[in-house]
Image 1 (cartoon, rainbow, N blue to C red):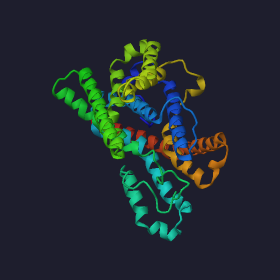
Image 2: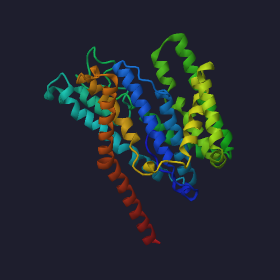
Image 3: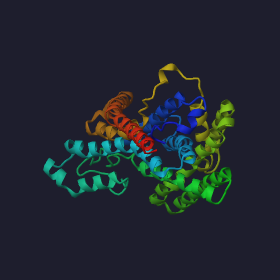
Image 4: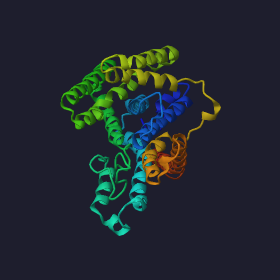
Length: 366
């Protein structure tokens, strides 16, 4: 997942309980998305070794590995949703409100016209309900030939997918238990169906040229393959962890074969990318500097797109490419850190405080 999920409580009995390399992997994936959108918006061509689509898929694989067991072991839907909401929603709502209010200075309209425009309220309504595709732009903002798109934050489309993936877990766990299914086979079937879904839309896109079909191919059902490969690796985590080098080599081989196989980016990438990122994430050989609990890759993901649009607004995209990218990266990291320590972290502490009070009340009633 795009956000920094903690390991489930039930996995804390297994050592190591914390994988610092997973932090490093998240930062690399977040930077991959930053570079991809930088290239798209500024018409540069900075090389990165993994595509933004696979970076997003890799985040989903990490989420599958971490999130599925948190519900499987303790199937409390309210707690499960609350844990996700306390981590995901505060930074998400922050970036939506900041853009809505702060980008008034980037609008062609006067402040009075801007805040009274129906487009302003449509933007807020659509983005606060994870329907950003309905109204991704703000009135008079990022308009003109200088901009490839007028979207304020083109990264937010993944958030509705993220929530759908989270909510699929209780359903899958219930189906497996209700019908006494083999969980390995069930999850493998989900992965296969997801790949078939993407193949079908890819074929339809090729014969029709409809951009909507391409967009639909990468939505919730198309991302199930990455998420549930992560779940499948969780099922076999002991064997997987005992063979990390072999698993990484296998994943890397599949990834290198991807461009050589027809529809390889659909058929092979979910397995290749998920295996690689989890093999790297689960290693215990990690530089000491990475051993902290304040990962801001999620906030980096949320903030970078509007910053890149503002770079164009200010004309700074005319700077040398590495100077422009450095400005984007520095501004993104600073805002991500500010958001984490002023918004994200206080809400996580509030969650722990409320959980502690609930526990005390429960003991008092006993």
